[in-house]
Length: 158
Image (spheres, rainbow, N blue to C red):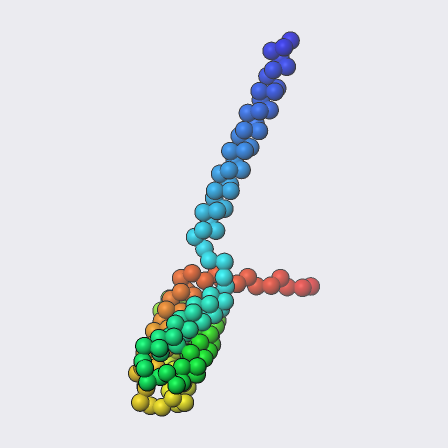
């Protein structure tokens, strides 16, 4: 009689152990999937990467002693250029799912915004402003296509 009572308890403990093992496997799989994807949408990732690179671009002006009197505007316009180009490239990357189109859009948007800054700063600094702006566009275009998450469409209300 005692052996009959022991069997269901053993079976329950085996089922519980099997359930715990299944939960551990499921948790590991979810962690692996989440570890391989970025949780930012493409425009938000573009904003973050573009802003960071724009700030670094502006701060690199400290390496040129002649820019010391205008460093505030150099940093401000570089940061704004990075933020605006980052979010614009992010929206283009969200619309078109092609690495080539993302990088090409990055070059174009970076060049266009750099041209606006050149019009204010003067044509003497054409390549000093244009090349870093286009490089920023290439990096942001690549990053948004490679690591950005496609945004979910909101549910349609009926």
